Image (cartoon, rainbow, N blue to C red; front, side, top):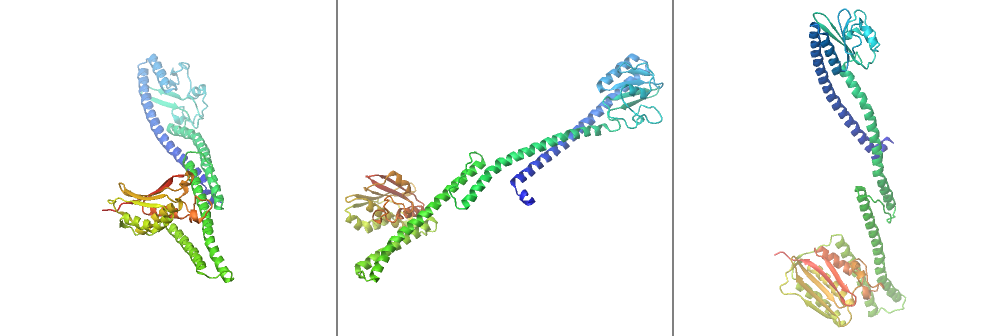
Length: 475
């Protein structure tokens, strides 16, 4: 359970944020204490020097019996140091008082402090004004300085805030105590921010995880609906794109299996029918019957070969024996091989190949296969008396080949799908008009394998023109 919580992104975010906050506060506290301590020590030193100077001035004025100047100096010192200053002589007479209330009175040190509202327990022995005259005073808010004098020296005694603790220690203690609320508040803010941030991040991730699990179970129609524009939104968009690709690929796979089964079923059914009729004695094994069975077997062989070529080309494993070849020779062979079919439909089959056409870097056999498929497709869809043209021209880095006809044309909605496997414009799925539906898909893959591209332009009733490119051969 503990390991599971540690593996949680929420827990790890919480730990990291809290560590950052604590380390930051600790660094700030150390820096603040160091800086404040240095400043406090400088202030104490400056104050001590100022007090010493004023004390010397007070002692000098007292020696010269300048009572008015003594009173002024004591009031000035009290104003600067924010203390109550009393000057007494050895007979406990108050010579001067910064508050101008005790001057002329005879008061012991305990009486003075009692009047000021301080409860102190004097130590045994003397009523000296030094700090050792008090055992453990309580926490005071107004410091008192008592100056006692004689003809030879002057002793400065302080009864400051929190007597018994060094001023620097008291100051550090106050700073440290003030930092604790900051630590608590910062920790709570960090905790709240971590929970809020983790919820913002983990909620869409949880949605993605749930959708992925449903897709794992076979439901490829699942999509995530996250409309943010941050990294999570980009991830959701990529996930939806991947899901669409998987669903489309699965649909294509199912269509392919169905189409392959359909294409194989017809010739196999014909062959089985002929053979069963012969075995049952319903048909004689004549030359015509054997020829029909042979044609169906050839169809099966061609279908299997086309599927193999297509799968190899799509996988990038189709081997091409590319070399510099003259395109005119390849075109001539392809046209000559199909000229008889064109003559049967009374079609005009022409070629327009420039004599200075540069050679192409290609596999002659595969380029011939491309041309035969395109020309055969044109013959199939061009009515009697029509015209088919094969022409070529050189561009900057490629040779462009065009196969155009004056046939029935193709509707615009079919053009984007022509190069897909088993796609037929003729919905009746008859071979007489639609073939196996693999020819153009093979052409597309063979052109891409040569590093070229193919496109089609068509107008219903006016004809169709296929254009593909091949790379020029290097000098």
